[in-house]
Length: 72
Image (cartoon, rainbow, N blue to C red; front, side, top):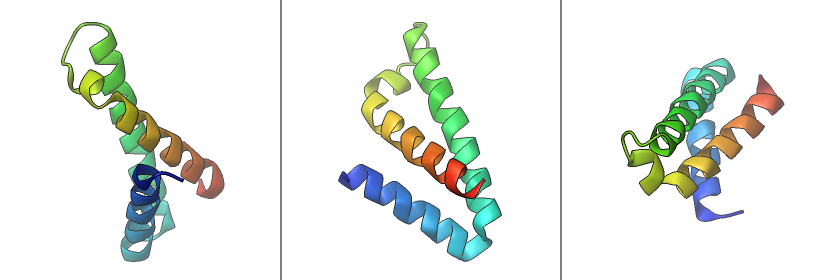
């Protein structure tokens, strides 16, 4: 597991511990949608945030989707 993946799992564990698993699932769902939208926007020539951070965003999306499938 990469450092980026570990940090995302730790962030989800923090949110779950603070606000509950359902809040962590909602956090993961929202983050996954936002990061995917940033990547799509960059691919269509818009804001290039998604292009600059594509690998990190894809890692986060992967962790979020795993969390959602496990807890959602």
